Amino acid sequence: MAKSLNTFDRQITENAFQIALIAGILFLLLGHPMLYNFVDSLFEKMGITLGDTMLTIIHSLVFTIVFFYTIKFVVML
Image 1 (cartoon, rainbow, N blue to C red):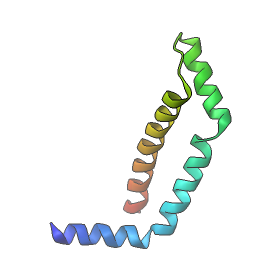
Image 2: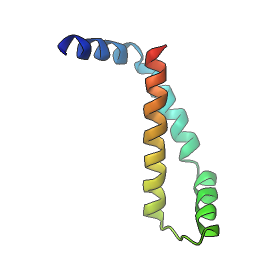
Image 3: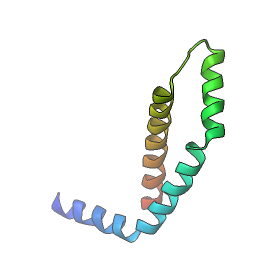
């Protein structure tokens, strides 16, 4: 188990720049006000009114999921 953690730690360290770059790009795309407005309007069309906090939570969850799978893919390369 310690060996696998050491390997994972080494991979993360080696890919730190890629991970930071991916996080920045995903944040720029998923945190853009136009996307917030678009998602908010989609929910309003379904009859669901979201406040600013709930909309931010939804975007945070989406960011987390997309970031996780993107990093998982990059580490496998």
